[in-house]
Image 1 (spheres, protein in one colour):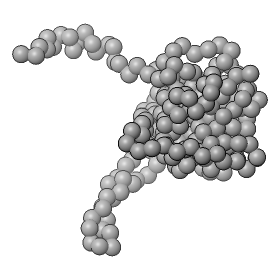
Image 2: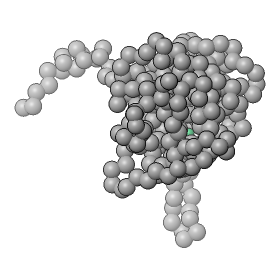
Image 3: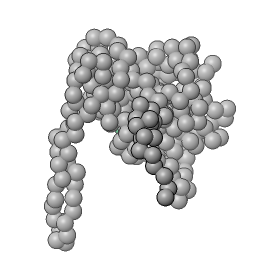
Image 4: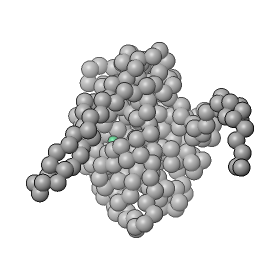
Length: 254
Ligand SMILES: [Mn+2]
């Protein structure tokens, strides 16, 4: 029986998390440890200057879970550093409400939680769906359970996580599964400047939802075709091709 840690960034009350926790029971022994509030777009962070709490909770289906005051990546660190004993064989983060495509992976707490597991040397999957709170998370979670079995059967190279994005399954089943590369997100952020009731200016980063550039083989493209996108992400962000050129700059200290 494999041991699976389930977490997310939308918080313990998310239906996406709950569906995942239920479906993964087909694969192994599930431990759920998730943040006590929504950490979406919180990126990868480590709480270093205040204590972290973990409290037991019961999910609506009656299964036990734990809730933490920490970030998504804190939840994974807490579990792997000893809260979960023995440690998990696989970490799955999600199902996030809203896709995480292209540069989203740098903002995403969902992806950060999976990345935290990979830093510790464990295989991990981050899962997001292009939907709102009412999405068909159960169907999505059943696909993730099948993927999790594949990961355990075949293994993943060290340093790799799988970033999975699903189309909205309320519109029907997906048209396929595509192994993709990261695509290009286009953010439509707009700076909104307003005044608070005391007359001081405040700023809000607003604007329309991000769109994407649809290039064949990219995650954005797969979702546009209503396919499930699976992007392997590596911890090593080095852009090796440019190293010889930079060496050619002959940089020296003096
Ligand atoms: Mn989220």
